[in-house]
Length: 81
Image (cartoon, rainbow, N blue to C red; front, side, top):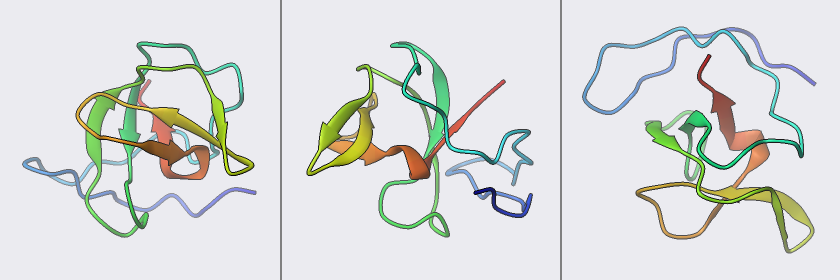
């Protein structure tokens, strides 16, 4: 399931247009640069890197990212090309 390609507001920067709007798969590598949306996708994104492989938290595929405590669901992650 894909979302419409809409502008994302990133904390401290101009809005950007992500190239990918499909959530990444379970092969997401540690150190991948991503936009992470803790909470809702309408909120501000963190420009960060993954610090874990995909893990299941409560049955939901998630990753850990630098600068945020806790997992973020893959549906709230966008890979930065």
